[in-house]
Length: 157
DNA sequence: GCCAACGTTGGC
DNA sequence: GCCAACGTTGGC
Image (cartoon, rainbow, N blue to C red; front, side):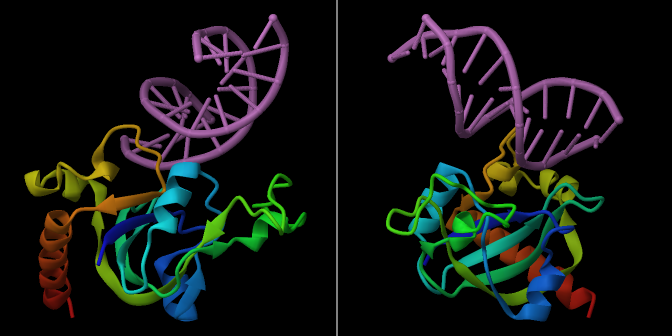
């Protein structure tokens, strides 16, 4: 089993949206490195959902990977904001996976709080200028985060 | 809204 | 294959 961090702008798609929909395609990834990571995902992998470009930035929830990668057909749709004319049905460039809602973290584990833990200093998302929207998370990082987050959620529910 | 850091494009 | 110009990301 592998662990991931998946970025989203909550104004476009938030953890609340995923909670409502229970399951959703993770579409619109248009970066080769992120795509390649998605292609290596397995069912039951776990992914932190990270809210970026918002007034509250940080880890907002947890999702499970519920499908392996398959063609992202939003690339074929001229009406879609994710349209890419280079990608065609018989030779799709872009893929997506489906993710299922698991948890919402309240409050969000903010970026600035994450920066305060030396255990998380290796995380890609904390590296300055890292724009990769799908990031691998190490087992150690996951373990630390999971412990931290379940403790926090306990205190608040 | 600003702007640094990054990824992509395209001329050569 | 190099690299300047450009568009985008994302924290602040």
